[in-house]
Image (cartoon, rainbow, N blue to C red; front, side):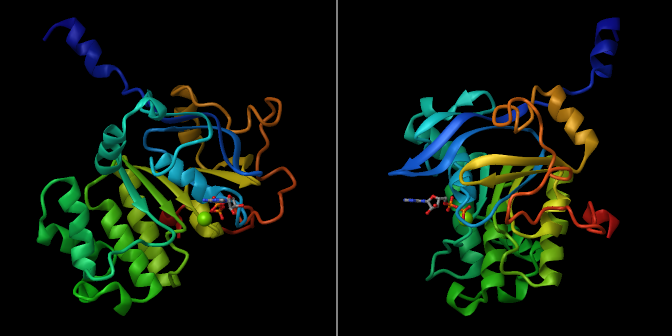
Length: 286
Ligand SMILES: Nc1ncnc2c1ncn2[C@@H]1O[C@H](COP(=O)(O)OP(=O)(O)O)[C@@H](O)[C@H]1O
Ligand SMILES: [Mg+2]
């Protein structure tokens, strides 16, 4: 082996930015659902998005998930501007790169839980019933696999959505209130699943009202009236990796370059992040 090869083997893999939003706004009439949001997310990051109802969380997720386009600003995914892509390129990204857990589920009503998961396989590549069943097993739903959505509880439907989102092993999972309808046991199951996906290198962006769910993420950001108003890192190592990838403070633009840490500043009304004493920082410490 040559010296050059040896050197190559010792080089640490460089973490890359996966998402780069520059001055993104979404405007409906006189409502700024998103108002000049600049945000970067590196590959493998686990990010929680918090904020009160109507603060723009779902709008942000829809734009990140290529389900919606900004009124102003730019979104780059792996360095490529989404606004420059054709509809078919965006469809390919939705299919190949992104797994979505919707706040409103969007399950096909006349298909069983298993079939709803298999639909995602069908649009991605090849239908594989055993694999779909294993995805339902990961969310604790094997015994409900042949039931229609109308025969499932809200929490069960939510877990079908999660199985559907992860079935094609997407690089990026966008989850909008994924534990909103779950009891404590199932919330723990989903958090453990997120932990596994995170360890496998999946980038996770999770909208949540739940302080425990937010505290499991490496980083938390807060939206208020469409603007980024808070940021907190729960994981210093992840923060360093983010900075090394060229990531900036989410608040660099909105607070004149002075980062506002959610733990030390007065929090806007509605924030339920990991500010309480005793909230575990990671589910592995529970
Ligand atoms: N399609 C739409 N047309 C008009 N207003 C909208 C639309 N979608 C969202 N909004 C408004 O944008 C704001 C942010 O909404 P949303 O992103 O759903 O907030 P959140 O998910 O944080 O509750 C709200 O004031 C909402 O009423
Ligand atoms: Mg919402």
